[in-house]
Amino acid sequence: MNKPLYKRKTVRVSAVLLLCFGILQLYRPELKKQPVTADFNGPENVKAILKAACYDCHSNEPDLKWFDHLQPAYSIALADSEEGKAGLNFSEWGNMAPGDQKAKLFEILNQITTGSMPLKSYQVLHRSANLNPAEIAIVKNYVAGMIKDHPADTALVNAATKQFNNWNAQNLKADKLPETLTGVPYLPDYKNWQVVSTTDRMDNNTIRVVFGNPIAIKAIAEHHINPWPEGTIFAKVAWDKLLNADGNVKTGAFKQVEYMIKDSEKYKRTKGWGWARFKTMKLLPYGKNIGYATECVNCHRPLSNNDFVFTLPVKH
Ligand code: HEC
Ligand code: HEC
Image (cartoon, rainbow, N blue to C red; front, side, top):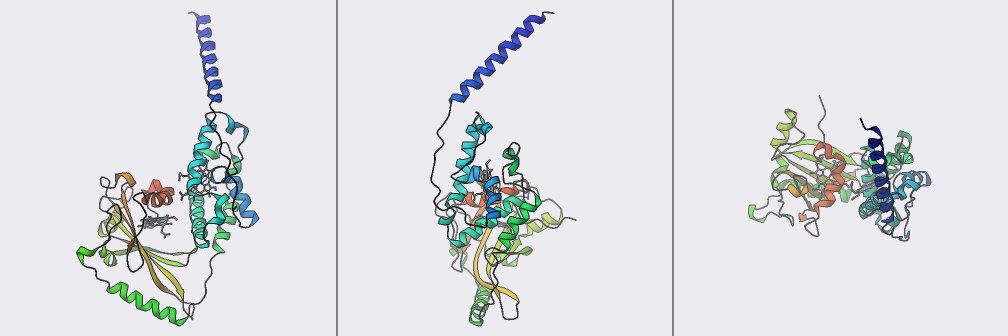
């Protein structure tokens, strides 16, 4: 055996690797400093948690640690921050309308409780980003505290009843059905489908009902729901939530209906689902451009291991 040669080789390889690492450090794209214009304005205890766990990627004041400055960690941190800030930037929080802030908080709570945020890869080195149950409870209580139930006046309740009846009776001509910019259709049939679940969304006072088409219902019965079979369709309807004088909850104005239509070929670019939202009784298609579904996919991403579907039937 020629041991010394083997040893020399190891030294040479190490030296080359070290050199590569050194050269890599020279590559240093600029960290663009942007001002904090309208920082998150929630209570201090909530802010402290978000600062420790989220601000590195979701604010204009990242607090990079020494090891974040080493390449390739530095480039990864920069990319994460660019991508993260595009969807949520706490430094510009105050520029959102109050309703949008509430919706964002609800989304934040969802991302945290499902364990999708902060990113797992980030938590490995940044221990302060590992949120414990007590910290999660603080965020949850804050979001829950924003619910405000005011009894609605009679006129509003009556108007809503009338609208509900209209919704029930609504019968559109087949050739007049709206569709989104990417051609995902409105499907009038959903009113006859089975209800998979109902939820009461605390942040924006809506009642939501999720309907499943017969393929979805069959898949649930046969426990074939991950992935959901081709042809599965979910429709989620949202109404304003009204409280009448007796404190009973009832549906208010019809807000929208949303669809997820499973077709892996046709909707390959949006995770195998066609995404559509039609707003108000006029059924106005949602989306300013053909990329509108990115927003849907991003918010459903915590459920990527469940084929992007939130509504899980009770396990037996
Ligand atoms: C290491 C960087 C990183 C950290 C830390 C991090 N995020 Fe994110 N976040 C991202 C990236 C990248 C995206 C966009 C892609 C994705 O969803 O994976 C994102 C997306 C999101 C979105 C969806 C935004 C949209 O597009 O609508 C929310 C909400 C969110 N993060 C909340 C949080 C919260 C809350 C925390 C702290 C508890 C957190 N994130 C911590 C990188 C991060
Ligand atoms: C702010 C986060 C968020 C965004 C953005 C979002 N969704 Fe959802 N979606 C949810 C949540 C949470 C549920 C679970 C049911 C509930 O709580 O209302 C859901 C449920 C659904 C369902 C019922 C099936 C399921 O996954 O449970 C459909 C259909 C749906 N969304 C369609 C859409 C479409 C279409 C868009 C984009 C136009 C969209 N969603 C954007 C959060 C979001």
